[in-house]
Length: 271
Image (cartoon, rainbow, N blue to C red; front, side, top):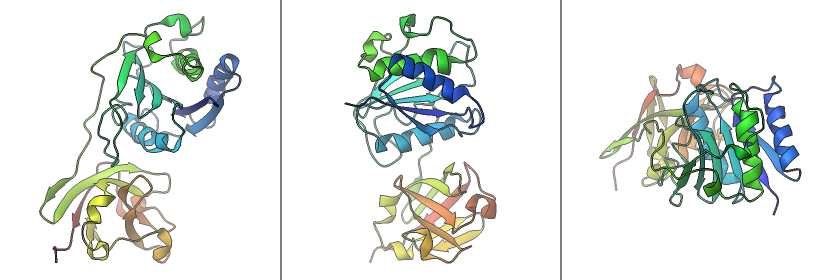
């Protein structure tokens, strides 16, 4: 089976850091296929990285090794974690990055099997010289190569029962009203909310009303092209969550919205 390793970082596309990680991986696992999930995570933004990781990982084959390095505390006492969840393997610093993938019930509307997490302590897998500021190259990359080549995570260190997590916001529902907020803003300025699309399908989706930043959107659309350019719309996005967008423009700019912006959904009454 092809060894697949994904990389998710905040290193940016103008740096050589991602290429250095790939160089180390390919030295140790020449047949690996290395996929750039993204290197454009906003700097130090662990919450955004956690969402990107959890939403993108299911698109890959079972056994894929996902390496997420958004690590503001690199060189400090934070642990390095290796986890198995949903038949995928994850490497990340213990700073909340695994919040969504290492819990049993994902906000994204699906579920994963019970996860298993270890704290990496076996330094024999590291590079000989470990930089205090570039663990992505010297620790995470060689670990990824080892895992993709079949090394069991149990060889990396002891199992742990608790990891760093941030609070995952859940929508609040009262009868026909759902109150949620923006969970993620994608590069197009689309607002991904924490409201599961399946919740909105309980009633007539054409009669749903969404209130956000003083705007009202009536009815759910299927795709951006359902409305004219420049018009607001709401729809169920590829992650299974309700999203708010402006066709061919940025909803974040139009509405002055960002992660944490609150919104209200009103469902039609049951017939």
